[in-house]
Amino acid sequence: MAETPLEAEEAGTVPPAYSDPLMDVGSSPDPTSAPEKSGGSGPVLFRDHFLIDINQPLPELDSPSAKAYAVEDRRDLGSKLFGLICTPGLPTRIDAIRQLKNNFLPGILPMVEWDVVYWPPLGESSMVIVYKVPLGGRVIERLAKKHVKITEYDLPRRIVEPLTQGLQIFDDWRIPHRAIRPNNVFFLDEEMTEVVLGDCVTSPPGFDQPIIYEPLERAMASPGGRGRGNISDDIFALGATCVPIMLGYNPVATIKEEELIRSRLEHGSYTTLCGNARIPLQLMEPLHGMMQDDPKRRWDLNEISHWLSGEKGPSVKKISDLTANAPFTFKEHDHYKRRALARHFNQHPADAAKAIRDEEFRTWLRRDLEATPLANAIKSLIDNANLHTDDYQGTDDYLVACVTMRMDPSAPICYKGVSFMLDGFGPLLAVEMLRKGDASAPLEAFSHGLHTNWFTNQSTPLPVALDRLQRFLARLKSYLLIKDPGHGIERLLYEANESLPCQSTLVAEKYVIDAERLLPALDETANQVESGVQPMDHHIAAFIAARFDEDIDPHLKALASPKPDTSVIGMLSLL
Image 1 (cartoon, helix red, strand yellow):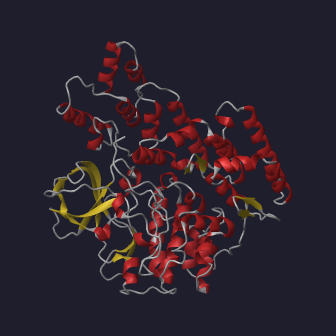
Image 2 (tube, helix red, strand yellow):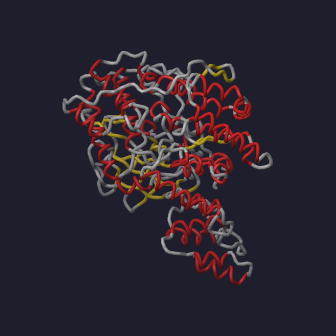
Image 3 (cartoon, one colour):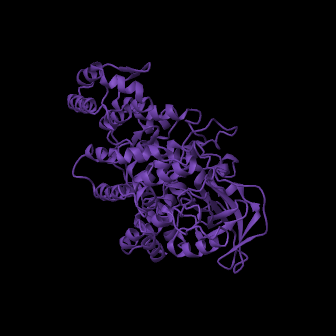
């Protein structure tokens, strides 16, 4: 893949407190995660009438993974617009872009246009997303400067109701927002009466989220692997976002990321975020309902609507994970909850493998946690590892991954330092390739079938969405098993990332996102390289195969032929 620096490694980290307690809302990574090179030039023209002013950055409108610049519409000079320049190589959300463009709806920041442009400061092409400027600015910044006050009595109508309207639209589209956090909520008008959700398309779902605004399972995943999710995840984020807006500060601002996750696993997300804060009585039930860790018990849009209408919502009962009668000590930490222990195991696989193989662990499961079926299942996994000492099934990493999936079936797959929800596998591959040029850990997990183990641990029958995901991943696995051009890792990468531009070194800097743009890009490249260079490689073949709806297998087979003439014919027919 094209090597572009991406510094959002700490996405999801809750940073130390800022000097202004209200501005500390668990902000996402520094906006410099959107890479820039020095230098500039005149305005960039696209779609014949939009001009991006390279010399007028708008840092107050930056997204964590995209820089903001002033945009002028030559057909409507009175409009106030800004453009977000996306990070090359980082998957964007083309499904949401298609729905949002020129679809001005309540509760959503209006998207005016998008395109791929050559961006001189980067020296390559990138995607630009153009929005209307939210004239009232970020809600959280206005609150910090005391330009506006939102009390517990104002919160339902001024914040929850308009944002819920926006979420209802996203739900109707069957597309989650997945970027709801305090610093991504804006006043659309100067009078600060209309509240809207900000950008959600310039990075993978959940990628830019501080972990307190992600549901627990997705918070435990690597930023790139948090997954597409659904409306339930957005409702959790909405509830968590309301807390700093209402309180005027982030009650967990100084808590480190891993401590936050451990507290959420042991005490629950609502208790972790709100336990030491003064939550008004009338908001306890709705906030608790929206922030339920069990998605089946979490409020939905109908229940929020009933509450906003003055009806009493369903009572929220605290259901906690089983607590052991005595602790299991691992690396000097006493664990009473198996989910928290599973998380700790995944962070130290070598030590965890020793603990798992020790009979004392299974005794604790049976006696103190009263989980004999789980202990028996783990014994079977250990026996299997002992039978495969010469292959991957006998390794510590594989054993620990399998055991922790049994201990916490809803958690992400964790393997060799990366963790991902299965609907986040594709974006994780792209992010790992972008950051490190290497996605061996998630690819190993996938090729070893850990995703199959994850599905086996779920209750049956599988929900429709999970069943669909299982079949999709099976199709991806079939591509991985074939090493010919048009298949392999490259095919998997493009099939799992609809908007990822072609990463061939021949066209990577031109940000080719669909087949129609490929030939013009190759023509341009032909004028810049030696005449003997073939206009085809594994990335281009896989990109074409993934972006074409019709069957091109005969062309791919010809391309893979050992006969030079046949291979050339296959290449030409593909192009």
